[in-house]
Length: 251
Image (cartoon, rainbow, N blue to C red):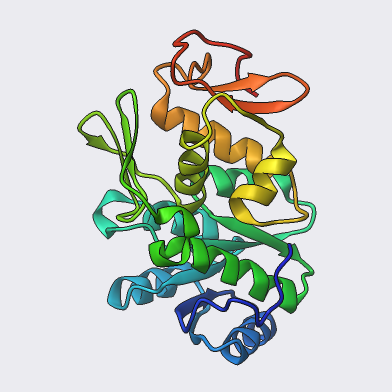
């Protein structure tokens, strides 16, 4: 990533840290507090959901390995239709648990940090997600709604529709769709998408693959044979609103 902990801080946020390890929770809460945020802590999934329902946080830092209701189930319930707008979530995962990281992203997490992690990096990740979750902080919110076929995206309102149906997009998915809608016909590598959409200079490229796959599931007629977000083999992805013909298949 190309940010420093103090550069462009998006302002104080209410952050819920969910981890059953009191040492980890204390360290994470301490760093986020020093970064200017208001932090609450939960030691298990039930407490996390209760706190999130009582006082909607601006962001969750969520460990996947929790007693009782695990982090993935917490994430699924947070993404449930009856809980209102999506709360941004940064996952904490064990270093070797790639399958859990991928599943967490598919369920709707916005980012992840692997244990053992640098608290400084975690603060950077949190600040990056917070920036993107606030429409006023994103430079590309200027202008009217974007329309492509039956897809309409209003960057100012942070809402997107396919026909009359509103799309339930995470922060990462929304930003990816907005980026692609503004640049039809241009091929971007996963590294370029990571840098230009989310401002990361490094990271796991599979994160991009997961977000592309999830976005396809929400905007394509047949996600297995995508006609809008097409794969250019050996290069990356391209948004092709006019062709209507599957090209490249899905990764």
